Every structure is written in C-alpha cells, then in structure tokens.
Length: 75
Image (cartoon, rainbow, N blue to C red; front, side, top):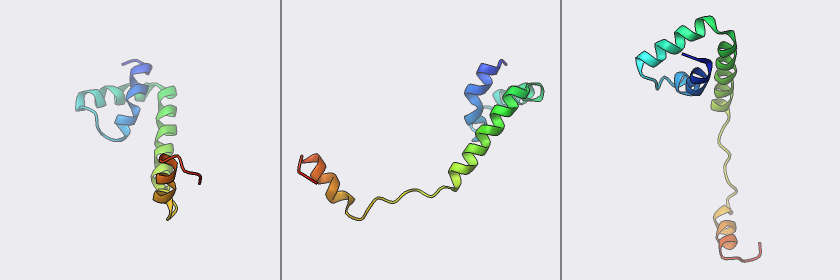
C-alpha cells in the first residue's frame, strides 16, 4: 500500500472502521514508513484533543435570534 492510500484511510483506521484486510495492509505499511507513522500520531492526538472539548451551547435566546434573522428582522 502506498502512502497516499494509507493517509486517506487513517481516520477510518483510528476509528476502527476498516475491513480487516485493509487494516492489516495499513499496519504493514506503518511498520516501515516513518512519515505515515508521524501522520497517524498527529491525527490520533488531534482526535484525542477534539474528543475532550465540550460542545458549545447556544445562547438561551438563540431560537429567537435565529427566527428574526430568517424573517429579515433587525436584531
């Protein structure tokens, strides 16, 4: 497997959503490719950080603001 194919599948690899054969091919590639190993580590760390961030809550009057915006009213 080539680097481009591996990199395109790293997100699915992290999420464990790949077919077993493809996963093995990626693992085989990663054993010898430091560039893809680095890419994997960077992506895995990014995913880890994002999972820790809490979702932002909209302001309480958001629906009122949203309706006014849709109706073209002044905010």
